[in-house]
Length: 301
Ligand code: ADP
Ligand code: MG
Image (cartoon, rainbow, N blue to C red; front, side, top):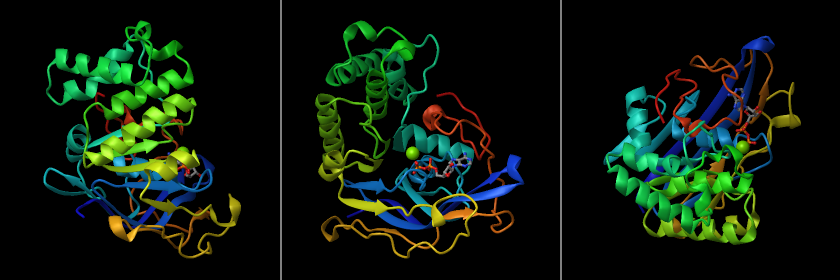
C-alpha cells in the first residue's frame, strides 16, 4: 500500500537554555511507515516523546536528525528540509492536527473555529459554517454553545470542538493527540467511528490513544516508544532496551520500530545540528495554532 509517512531514524533533541545549557533527547532512532488507509498508534509512558513525534509530523518541531517524509502535493515533503512556506502549504492541504487541548481564541465562537480550516482551503464561508454545524451536531456539542467562544466549555466539549475542527477538511493525514482523553463513553464511541471512517476514506492516521479499547479498534500497528533511559533527568543516554516492539501488521504493510537510545543527555553530550527551541511555549500549548516553534515563524490559524 502507498505510504503516507516514511520516518527513518528520527531524532529530536531540545536545548534547555536556562539550565546550563542542557540537552534533552525526546526521540531517538525512531523509524516507521504509515500507509494510506491505516492507523499507527504511538504508545509509551509519559514523557517518552509521543507528542514530540506528532509535532515533528506537523512541522512544529524541526528534527535534529533523520528523515521524515510526508505525502504532499502528489509527492513527498521532507520535513527536515522543508521551508516555512512548504510547511504552511502542507498544513493547509495535507494534514490535520488534533492537539490534546484546544487553543481558545477570545471572542471567536466555536462554529468559526471549526469552519476555519475549510474556509482557509478556499471554500465559501457558508459551506464552511454548514459543514461545521454538521460536525458539531455529529459530536453532540449542544447547539446553544455553537455561537459562544469555547472559553467556558467543559474539557469534553472543548475536545469535541477540537476534533470537529480537525476532521472537517477530510485530510489525507490525521494527527491525533489523545483525542478521547476527556470524553464520556458515548462520545468516545462517536470519535472512534469517525477515525475508522477517515481510514476507510483513505486517510493515514497517527495517533496517541490512552484508551486501550479505542487503540485496539482503530490501530493497525503500534509504535512503542521507550521510556527515557534510566527513568529521567541526569542519566546517561544510549542504553535503553533495543528494538521497541514491532507490532506492524504485515497485511497493512505498516511497520513500526523504535530502537536505540532514548533519554537525557547531560550537558555537552549531544550536539544538536540545528538551533533548538528552549521551552519557547508551554508544553501543552496548541501546536495546531500555526506557530512553528523551532522555525520561529508565526502565521494565522
Ligand atoms: P509524551 O507526549 O510522550 O508525554 P512529550 O513528547 O510531551 O512526551 O515530551 C517528551 C520529552 O521532551 C519530555 O521530557 C518533555 O519535557 C520534552 N519536551 C517536549 N517539548 C519540549 C520543548 N519544547 N522544549 C524542551 N523539552 C521539551
Ligand atoms: Mg503528550
